[in-house]
Length: 306
Image (cartoon, rainbow, N blue to C red; front, side, top):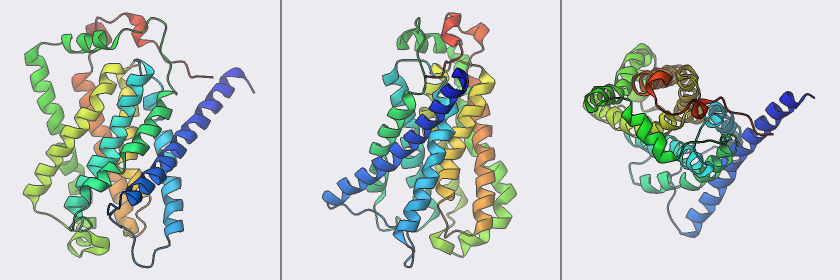
């Protein structure tokens, strides 16, 4: 096996271990919640086999390590900064966002449990984020974090940032309603019929929810815009894939009680949402290299760890 092939192979093994870290963190978090006598919402149908559902969860967790690998490997910044950025993204998407979606589009949290459900993701997000932070390497002349932040925001004027940030916040609701309208006729009856606990809120509630989701997605994605060391196109692909995995594929691959057509169409829809939103963030907010005063070595391609 050549040195390059060995490096890629070891990186893939590390990505799988990051997925395992998420599983272990979830188990430990569940044990802690049980020890504290907190009520964890139960999403399993009455006749479901817990071991079978755990197997679905473990397999779905593989998507996290491999889906976030293209985003984690090229990041700049210290290992601690990379760790916190990746953990924040995982927590926001799988903790905060998932709780919001379940609260709005189902009846599972009608009797409470939202805070416990959200807190349950903190430990697995930290463990998985720590593992993912080891996939990247920092060049010898890595600029300090504050210099990166100043460079990023000094690339444009206040007015230039203002309209770009506004469009970035509005991008997700626009993509959501655009692609949602394409699959809506095929899935709306499942929500209206209350299948598997689904429910359909008023349009005004959906709009407010998407604005909130867009804002938290923006907060979680901003560190990657600042820390990215490769091209804008590569960030678009990596960030879109990460959002697709965390917001859609991870949960839908486990939702075996949902109708199959609904799961397939929502997976495609969320993929379109994720890449459209990533495109908006990257091409609106990430300065071109000619606009960024950071030294060129800050943008060097990453070297996979051996």
